[in-house]
Length: 184
Image (cartoon, rainbow, N blue to C red; front, side, top):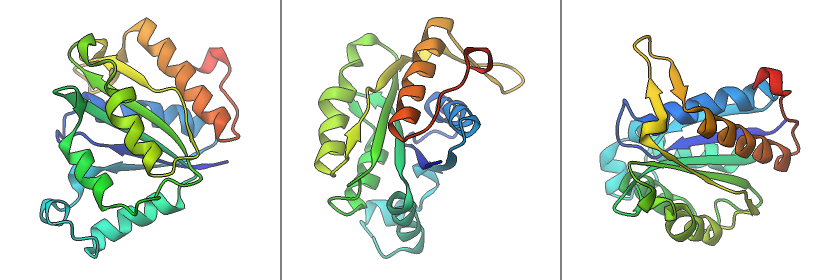
């Protein structure tokens, strides 16, 4: 199966975006993909903001992008755009870092006013980086992602179904298989 790099562009350690990505990572893993999580906030801030592409952590992250067959990119939406943290990371990658890759863009936000951020802010950047195929993305409202007291994630039923379908489409685009409804 494919190697999938799952990138969280959230600056928060308790981010719903990050938790949602890890939830979808589990689904992709059950489908047989090797999933590698990358939380951009874990990269050194001085290297990100100083555009230090030679920093070992930045070089290692760029190598993860290079080796991936597919990339899931998740970001919270702030002021109708993807996070500045994600922008800083994408800016450090080579111009055509996504050439030949299948990409799944995901976003979270507090209001449906930001639903088009994927198509008008993130998708053009991913396309300019050479992504071979950008599958249909998905915007999830913050209120539809709940972290329970035990730390597990609960996703609103309609949203969970849509995310499962989007994730399965991504898996198929990578040449994978989808889960049976009973295991979703």
